[in-house]
Length: 84
Image (cartoon, rainbow, N blue to C red; front, side, top):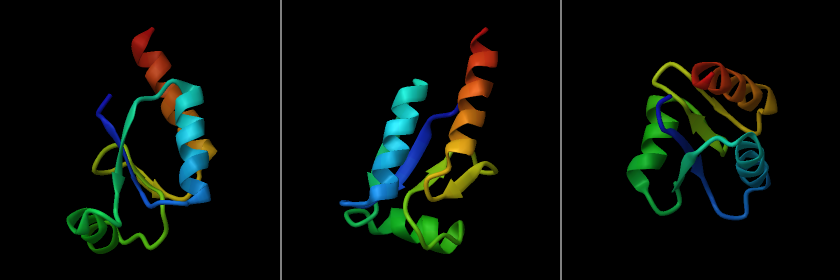
């Protein structure tokens, strides 16, 4: 699986919920703070069209905004199938 990136901002409740769900599912990820990285903010807002954090990017075609346990479960299931 590609490296998952979570574009986030400080004090974001949905971001924290996303980290916890990813951790619980055993999914590794990288956090990018969009308040500290203007290029990352431009990428998620201009290129991907999102206005809400977190933005989770799995691949160029697989990404979403907000806390989405359904997507996290899908990724975890696909990861487990690939590992097994």
